[in-house]
Image (tube, rainbow, N blue to C red; front, side, top):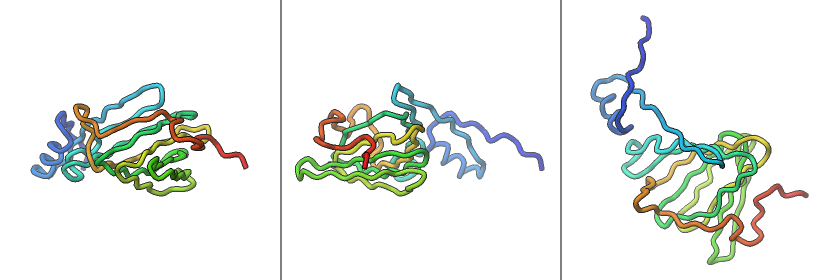
Length: 164
């Protein structure tokens, strides 16, 4: 049996999912890139499919980039670095404590970042870093659950390589 092309679907991933189930046929939903000078992202990959509010994203961060700090009042983040390596930073300014881990190809794992903790990441090494992440609340551009600080707002946080 010769294969045929998977039908392209131009609506939402949730609608494509429902149609695929209803017709017992696959559907292809093109993804869109968001790009800027720090890297690129594929956003809202499974919105409406993995629970009513969750969202899966993939972001590539270029070498030398620090994306920090931000926090959410309601959302929990689950971060898995699949390509390259990231220094993940998490901080609680109220308690005066911060945490860090280098995660990636040679140290895989999922960082779970609950609401209210400041967090961010810096690329470690000379290769781009790819971050697959699930968030428990989909991003709402009209009412973002996000507060931001400058990357150097947490004193003495080591975003770069620690020489020892």
